Image (cartoon, rainbow, N blue to C red; front, side):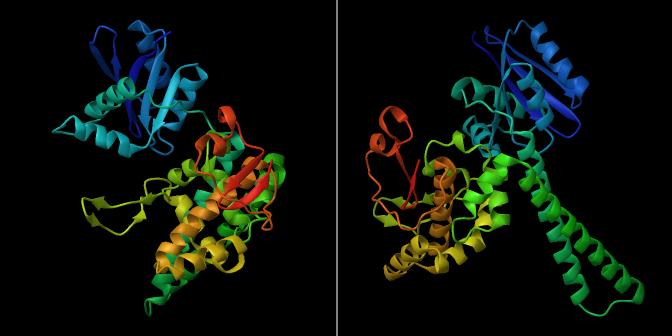
Length: 350
């Protein structure tokens, strides 16, 4: 059964929908972004004659999560896209305006032409862990802002007391959130097992492990370490045109939260992880800058994390191997996971 492309533009209070009919016609309508509105949206699609829809929407944080989950539960096809994909799709159409209705049309056309991969909802325990970690990050940012205000100079007594009181509250809230994160990891057997695998890698602590688990989601969705690096925006970005060669940088098209979570662990790993230390020294001896080495170490650390999660074995620095250039050998015959899984130059036996 061929699904009908359905483009969705989601805002806090409304959802703009555009349905592409087999005849080439387009149908548009706006719905409230509520459970009732979601049901009305699906009923409207069925009224148009759609036996099955393939809905495409931007990743808009929590605004679109309920609708994506509803459509998935109703056995419809759903794709949640990186917003930049639709931005460039709109530019390719030479769009001269931007409205919610036009954005829904761009999403529908992209869905019809590209057939993007389907979205699968994350496990509830991962959703809760992700929410706790993002709350922790927000609280830390608020505390730093209040500390900056407190240290900016003298304040009237009332303002001073208010700042100090708020900082005490934020400290308590941070401690409670850290305890909730720890409890979530301890009380979920699968997360606890994966956390223990990750902290076996020198440079990755319990908090970094939690960020990796929450932001990567189900590691089985990635076929190889390169896909994980691309997801985090840690792939190299070459810059070359004719005889001109610019500096290679990180592409940074991916999860900024993962890059933030890996920055300081990579610096630590360059000192204490034998694989990363040798790797960093090799790059520095070739004249690479310190920031480039840190970026490369972040990518290698993510490769190691993928390796231990994929294999289910803790990090072992005494195993090493040469990464083959043959994709069939690297991924195993027939695309199966090989008996020895490679990750960032270290060896994990599956």
